Image (tube, rainbow, N blue to C red; front, top):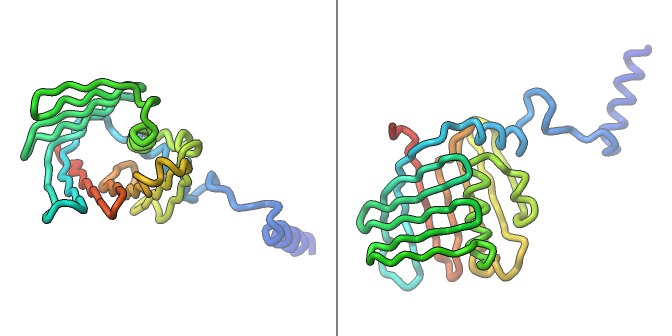
Length: 195
């Protein structure tokens, strides 16, 4: 009788919302587990292919290169069909263009760039808690195949960046989809087999 009463009490608590299911229970998959898996992923160089569909162009642009992650520093190097690099280090972004131009600025001075940089860096290094202040965060799937959808909270940022979707398995991001204004879309596919 006592065990029956315990089960009944547990069912009542669960159905009333007093004892919600927690993502940290053994076997559960949630943001905390995804953050840990991403943080444990090895640093280093990962090849990518990126397809940009821009409303004012007749055909998509296909780029390739590599992403380098070292601690809090992220580098994106495009090697084909042009050479360009973007480095995010702390709050500084440096862009070196194919034309030989060098730009350096603080991400805090540019809301859109700050949102994008925060989303990419936080996800790639596993710091998902930092996303809450700038994005509505939705996670679906399981460790074997997950999707993380981010929608900027700031309306002015959301106009230019309606959303980002990152998908992967375990601690590896496999695709990054960035929605832009006017239906523009950028899809980056990461190939983790690069030494």
